[in-house]
Length: 609
Image 1 (cartoon, rainbow, N blue to C red):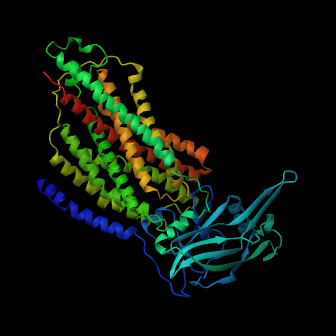
Image 2 (cartoon, rainbow, N blue to C red; image 1 turned 135 degrees about the vertical axis):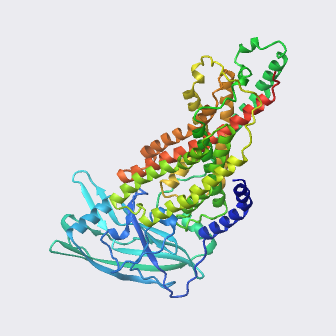
Image 3 (cartoon, rainbow, N blue to C red; image 1 turned 30 degrees about the horizontal axis):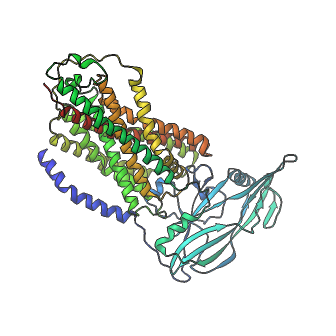
């Protein structure tokens, strides 16, 4: 084991450098050059309800123009996880060559197919095409509600699309689709009436699909084409400037830091002076007042129950802290280009597997320090603490997507790939990290000796109960990120492109600072009441932020979004629960280490008999 520990630490730098190079190769973008008249492939991707971003279906599930044999594009892991299912289309686009009203295909739709299109249009189905990694969005059809008496309900199908493509040199900069000056083909009940390019006969409907292509020169270089997509607004723009969030969080951090500093500089200073002066006179009067934390110096480092679970929480929390920091710094380096579909999903899976060694190391190291004996069970518990709920939630969500025919249902090959990444990379790294942590773990550095018999804890007032501490410790960190949390939800559960990662890093640092500060303050109040059960209390107090985040997700679903249906609701609440769990583990770990450092400081600074 010692040899394994040394070899692991010696090769850590080399492997991490190799991982960084591989990740840079995977997620960086590059320019594709075209010659005059060269074919630019347009891929059809997916369709779905406008208000349900995660409920998507393959474009060819609708009765639309399609080739005789569908050829799918090879997709990355992140694209598959994002629900992409790109396939070649019948649209023939040549670089810098305009096309006017070219026929795509002529379809004869049955009455069932017309009803299918009507239902999709009434549910506000939109489509997504991809041209040179640029997403192109548009609505399948047109719906109009007018009048009360008589009521008018009109449904129309767009049979002509105008593609507007911008270029610079030999690169494609931007592309969109419009239906301006185009009349929709009405889809009446029972296949409708003949209008324009529509023919009716025997309960069927004949529709001719056409398209036009227009090229425009753009001054933007290829390196800045993400700015053009960011300024485009097919979906509603809800993200505004983030300064209000930053100012609100900074004010809260300043107040909390000032509060903790007052405790450390004034209250503790008075406590040190009182206890050290009265030391020679005995400790009989130390029970008076609220400052009774010296009395429990023989119990404050008494190891808690459920040691293995506590260490697993700390280990997985440290892993997610490392993962979140890595994702944010990768984003700051520009590795998540908006044109690289699903890059952040791929990065999260890769980093989760690679950072498994962090959870094993932290958990098993601290478990050994607090005299834990079943270290093998501790490693298994650490590896499954988050992966087991994740697998259970994914199984339910993926089954519902599979039942509904959504493209969000992962294919078997992708499932095996992710499972292989955990079995062959994630779990072995957890075991290796645990072995290294066990061998390198020193003794638990407690400045005070612990008695064999625990001291009786006096009755505590209501405001020092666990539920009250969880309410206070969870609400304050949540309030520090509440404004930014809306932007994050609008990105994850909407269609916004989040690009202000510098502000996100600031808010993330503020969140950790607030969690650490409030944990220290609550721990001091707990010890002042002569209650030495701070171990789990420090984890739960700030870890309860996850509960507030889940409550906010319910509020967002009901009041800030238009999501509905079984498919979208199951995915939203399932993964919102996992998100709340991640925040609870991460903040619980941070608050525990802050409380432990604080307790060691105050008892080390106190003169003991």
